[in-house]
Image (cartoon, rainbow, N blue to C red):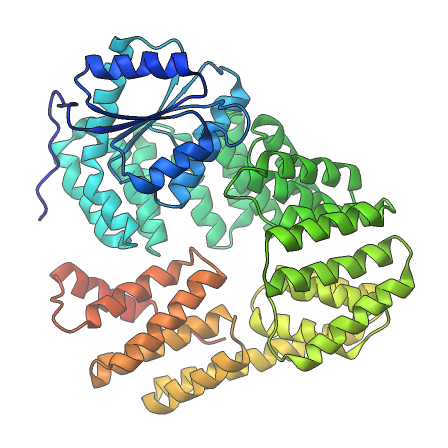
Length: 566
């Protein structure tokens, strides 16, 4: 077992590497002198967010002191989110957000990206040393856990949490909170629920109740999850994650107007989140609330200008808004910016679809039909299909301009790749309804679902009758026909693993199984079975000795996570 991390009463700050980020030279000098008084010798400075990112790319800092408001360009929040997403910090690095900002909006915006501490100016040397010592010692306890997390070895990271608890009772709650989140990522929701419920016996933690709600939502109990999230918000109206989860639970129940209202409340509390404003815009656009959609998308573009989370989605959404407002000129300008700033075939395709929808919504049916004809030719020339959302938008446009066969094929493709997603089937049915194909559409949806289920079940039957070679070959065909069907992808990976468990390790099958799972993680990251199957793959690597706990876990998986049919 790994030795527990040390929790020294003091820290030698002399050899640590520091970065100070502030747009005022006087503040940088004051912070530098405060660090020097602690013995610090290696101190870099940045006067802007862009300069800070450049330094973070070149040096792994032990401590970063970053101002929230950095003037023109990236804010401290932008720098922190980019450093987290691009892994520019070591697991043991300390990030102190320093600011004169006391508003709820600023603090909540920064807190969503999890700085280690938020310090309000002016800062005394005593306060700085106290916070640094406290945060540094805590980070050392989590150091090996964080390394395992970065390697996506979530089960090992969870076990490391258990190993640290007896030695660090002061941080037991934090360790158990981390363990529960790791178990969720490892595809062990019931174990995570047990941890959360144990914690809730001692104290009514909002994050633990939210965690239980997420598990219930993942299990399909959306009403129970909704009640838990609403209870958390009633207790603490500033617990922003509960709003996002409540909106998701309402969407899963088909209660779109209520979900939009919840997202709007969350955006008022913490308005500087690019994903939240984008989600609000999409929800409002779907409901036809054009003023709210416009407000959210424009806010998304403003706050996202310097953010690593900036994407083409808000440009396409705002372009659709402009189409509804009969302003195709601005819409086309937005599409031009999106194509310039986010080059790629998918963006070009989405721009062409959105262009056609804008023309149709603004009454220019001739140009809309021209866009539709071009898309129909593209579909004929390339048998590959884009992601689900793009397929739905393309089908909507093609139906609107009078094309029938191509959008029907697209929608059936979507259903076959998501044959157990009832909410998505409802979306598809609404598109058929709008095209005046209600009965025919319902029959097509049912037929597509049946086709996908039969294709998957044939592979399952071959596996269950121990025809492993035939099962592997059949699932390859199934993956080629339905490349984004999660059930088929997971079952294909499980069959490849079963083949190696029964017949011995095979490098090509190992690479194939790993490729399938990496595709799953790209299509739908965070799936519960992903971590379980990755763990089973790791146990098959030659020369790796499994622990008794891993052997027991593998046996449990074989009993409880059988390959699933329809």
